[in-house]
Length: 75
Image 1 (cartoon, rainbow, N blue to C red):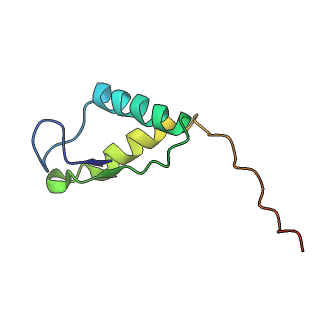
Image 2 (spheres, rainbow, N blue to C red):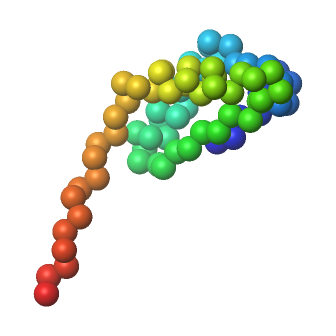
C-alpha cells in the first residue's frame, strides 16, 4: 500500500479517523495471511514520520501467528 495523502496528493497528513480506517484495513490483510507493506509518500509537509508512527501504534497490538519453524529436509 502506498499512501500519497488523503485530501491532496503528496501534501498534508492523515486525520486520526483516516489512520484508524487504514489500520483496520491492514489488520484484515494481515489476519488473512497477506504480507503487507505500507509506504507513506505525502512528504511535502513533512508528515510522513508522524503518519507512519500513528499507523504503527494502531497496529502494535496485532501480532500474526508465527510461521511454523523451518525444518531440515530428511537426508
